[in-house]
Amino acid sequence: MEDIFEVQWAYLAFGLLMLFFPRAWMRIGPLQSRKRQPRESLERFAQDGANDPDNKSVPLGRELRKGRNYVDFLRGCSGALALWHFSFIADGSFRPLAFGLQILISAIAVIIQSTRWREKVTFFASIFFCAGLSIGMGNFYSAALAFLFVCAMNPLLATPRIFMGTFALMLLPFNTLIGAGFTLAMVNTSLVLLPPLMSLLAKRPLVIFTRKRNLMW
Image 1 (cartoon, rainbow, N blue to C red):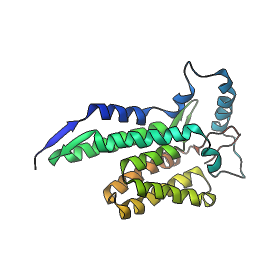
Image 2: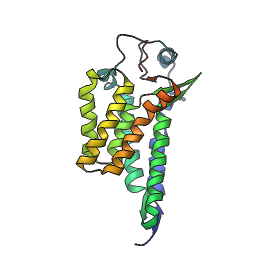
Image 3: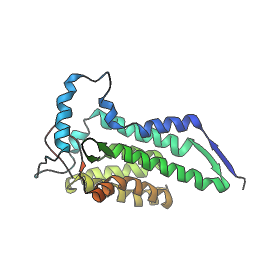
């Protein structure tokens, strides 16, 4: 088998732009209105530790009404499609190299999208970005079915950390059985597990920022 390794730079650049652009940057810059500042202050208050002990689950209905979540989903999906299906042409001994680069870039992307730095580090539950990433990198139907299954289970999932952990674990059987293959299924599961694992290891919350004074673990 002939050894081949080519980088499709246009696709790779597009994938990196989609995957590495931080969600927080959507709210800054010259086009940001001063009217957005009160929301920012409430998000900062949520990050600093206020919480509602009666409801820490993912407010899925409200999250589905947020436009930025759909942008996150599309960024994750399009970036993963470009990275995993078009950026590298590799065969022979170079196939593990291309696969390793794809895993490394995807892991860095998840870390960027899930981490906020202000006075201290806070981990954001990048649910929609990870859903898009999972759909783009593997089998569309398996990741979509796993995400819909977890959304249906949401009333039983007490926190964003449990939501993301359940989604990650559901990706393994769905990806394996429907066609993405066990290796890619393991990689996909590991990537989605990164945010909850990072928050556990750092002993910091995994949060969903909201207008309400609400911090969810």
